[in-house]
Length: 320
Ligand code: UDP
Ligand code: MG
Image (tube, rainbow, N blue to C red; front, top):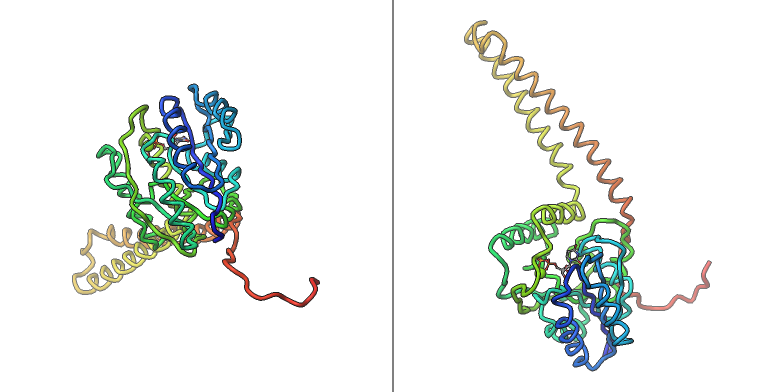
C-alpha cells in the first residue's frame, strides 16, 4: 500500500440524533490526527428523527470532511454501509457504528494496522463487550455458526468497527445481491486479514435497533449469503429416512419368516416401512431441486468470480 493512504470513514445512522453531535466531534478529531487526507461518509438510513437535518448541516459546516448520504427509507445497517462504500473514495475504508459503542478514537489504530502491512481486512474484537446478556447470546451463536460455515476463525463477526482495503470494498460493491452481511462478504475477498482488540462502550442514548426479528433476519442473511448447505441437508435427510425404511422392511420380512404371519401387527409395520421409503425419496427429490435452486441463486447474485490480487509482468502483445 502507498505511504500515507487516504481514509474514508463510513457510518450508518438510524435515529441517532442524541449521539450525532458527540460522534461528529470525536470522529473529526480522530480523523484529523491521522495526518492523511480523509472523509467521513455518514449514511442516514431513513431516520424519522432529526438525524437527516443534522447530517445535512454537518456536511455544510465541514465541507470536504463530512459527506452526508441520505437514503429515502430504512434499508438496514448493512445496506446503509454499502451505500456509504459506494461513496467512499479512500484507500482505507473504515466502518463503525453511530451510537458511540465503537469509540471513534480507534480509527487511527485500525488505519495504521491496515496501512502498515498491506492487509485487506482489519477486524475489531470488542473487549470487554458492553451489551446486555440477551443481546450477547445471539451474537455468540452468529459467531460460532459463521466460523463453522466460512472456516475463517474470526472472533467477533458482529463488530462493525473494521477497516477494509479499497480493492475489497470495490469487490463487495460488485456483488449485486440484496442481502449482505459485510464482514463475511469482505472475508471472502480478502487475502490477508488481521484482528485487533478495540474498546466497546455501552449505548448511552437510544436503544439497540436490533430486535429479535431483525436478528433472526440477519442470521438468515448470513447463512444464505455464504452457503447452500441447508438445501443439501434435505437430500441427506431423505437418504437417511429412505435407508431406515428399507432396513425396517427387510427386518419385517425376515421376522415374518421366523415368527409367522401374525407378527408386526398384521402388516401395519410393513406400511410404515413403505411409507418411510417414499418420504425419503421425496426428500431426496426436494434436495435435488435445492441443488438447482442453489446454483440459480449463486448465478443470480452475480458476485465477481474471482478477485485478482496482483499481476506482474507486461504483455508485449497488442490487444486482440
Ligand atoms: N442502523 C442502521 N439501520 C438500521 C439499524 C441500525 O443504519 O436499520 C445503524 C445504527 O444507527 C447504528 C448501527 O447501525 O449506527 C448499529 O445499530 P445498533 O447499535 O442498534 O446495533 P447493536 O449495537 O445492537 O448491534
Ligand atoms: Mg450499538
